[in-house]
Image (cartoon, rainbow, N blue to C red):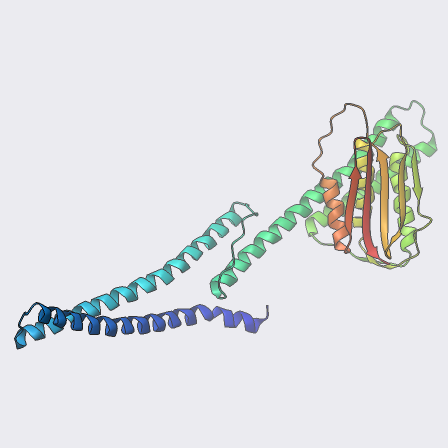
Length: 333
């Protein structure tokens, strides 16, 4: 909304009040003349019909009574109409108060209905905007908190694996240190983003190479426990501005879901290709048939869906009792 529109809206409530008073005055005046004329006519017709004679003093008193009743009636009508309008505004102000209270107590699902087009409407829009912003920040925090746990889990899993080995070669130790360094840097980047609350776009000249690197990290995180196969042969060469950490979070969430829910005795496949000129990541696996219980809040899926939407894409999942597949549609190339 432009500054000019805001200024016009902020003076509209005053105009509405003046228009109401003017309209209320006109209606009350019309009612007064109607009541005065009708009441006076009916009073004299009643006296005539019942053969009640009125002298000059009585006629004056009757006229004054009709006048006073007409004025009283029009005043009551004026106050009633004014209170109806004010009552509506007070009821709306009450909704605004409820919205502010909901915002204060972090009940972010409360939304104030927009009524009219004045200062109160602008205030309602501002409160709704603050609530929506808070909801988005909470979603980002929740998703990033989940994503931070993913590299931590990878470090812990690999540490447990290395701890179970009696003799470690220098190559294995170097691999573990490299993985730890890589995941620690990822945790640092995610933590900084959690604090900054922003997206960091980088100019990528060889997107296919980036996808190859992320796919290799995906394989490294799973190859100790799963038979993994990855195919990026149909991924085209592309470039543009992308958030590398967001893309890495997609692959980390994919591998995390495999570690939690996939059957370790069945293969896991990942492919990267295009569909309607958009980069598409597909992963499929068999579901784990063991009785282990893993709490699922679908935060990883939600996080990937949020990232896909940043690039105008979406996510599709298909599953039954034995199989699970996910399709992530990203940016256009």
